Length: 359
Image (cartoon, rainbow, N blue to C red):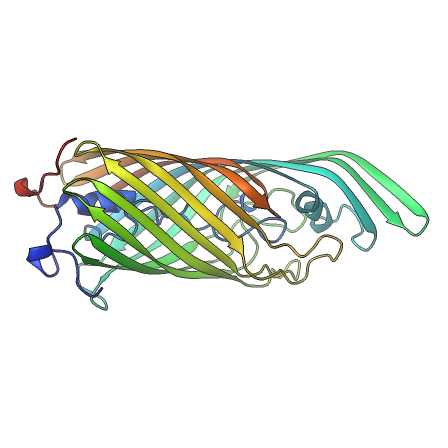
């Protein structure tokens, strides 16, 4: 694990130089969390965004400054307790009464994420260190409709109708640190990330951009990458610890997540493949309403991906499009989401002998 990729150590295990730039573009360690309704835990909302990591996640990158820009679009829906919890949180009814639920929540999130990062050439713990921070801006359009029947003793009240809100603004800031190691076709990584809650948030909002509380996440991953034949598979897993939301005195439970990606280079510059994720809450929330809780959310997502590498002199661009369809969801909104990614990184040194076989 402590053996670095070629420019740092062992020439015998040198990977083709193209793999550095490709990995810089494909390693989607650019996003940490997104506007509130798109995830899990409190009101079906979490810090971690499933699908964050992708193909070649653990492969060391080309040293220097890098920039990743992602347009993320998410369309999700929920019903029952997840939808009703939003009405409780924003103060639309008294949570002490008994509740019969026939409520639907729908949300559309459209944001642009900007993630500058720096990859160090000097080894750290025998590996390659990168540091970055993510910021984003976008729109969250959320609506609730249906009926709530509130019962207290012999009295019952049915509330029908719809409410909606569109919020546009900046999100939280998400610092991250990653160390990667290489040994031939095997690559490993560890990472740590956090949430600085400075984004647009109010506990009385139906739609938020920030999540309203801090969080910390850590984990590790592995990538198998054989550039001679173009085969690749990556998996990254980790756990999230959420701090208490000071506006609601609510603390989401501990979350486990696993992102994976598989790809095949059909030419030196074009790849196709599949992506997916597993997300599961492993401990219950604290501070939620007894009539609706405990929330222990989970979801599975899977979909296709395509990517293209574009050399631009001293800079290399990579464009990737991937999509996820979600299923087996519980206690969280679910639906589908797309990622359109543009990554810019330093070009790798030219090595004519390192050309990948063209299929």
